[in-house]
Image (cartoon, rainbow, N blue to C red):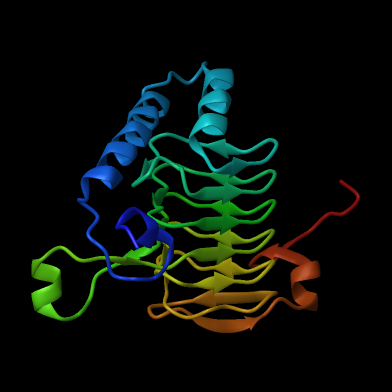
Length: 202
């Protein structure tokens, strides 16, 4: 198996392999162009994202700067995904994000890791494990997701959390390491923030 083939296999490989670097640099050229767009160039941004990403649905919005190891080449976004400033996608392998998910500022989604054994790190070895994020999630500012994580649908992750284990559907989770705080419940149908009631008539 070539080094390029190992990107999506969870196997150890050397990311500075010439065949990998040649392809990766072309992707980073496109990312540079996206980050250099002006605020009024919304249509240009949309066209660039369609070219950059493996898949990107309708009505997605990513606020530059976007940081991404492969410029989104291994990223799959559903419809209506929103990302605030400073999203980092370490997309050395695949990242999947469901419809209507929102990223706060400076969220990191990482698929790449390095072995604990110093002798292997010294030689530059790396492994990749894909990340799956469900539909209608909200990841607060500064959330970090480590390689190999699966997050269910309708999950809210508190700002600054470090997600090291899978999260089920319909929960609020916080902390470092991130833990389930509670299920989404009936009170959430009445209040949107502290004692602020939802006015469904409006």
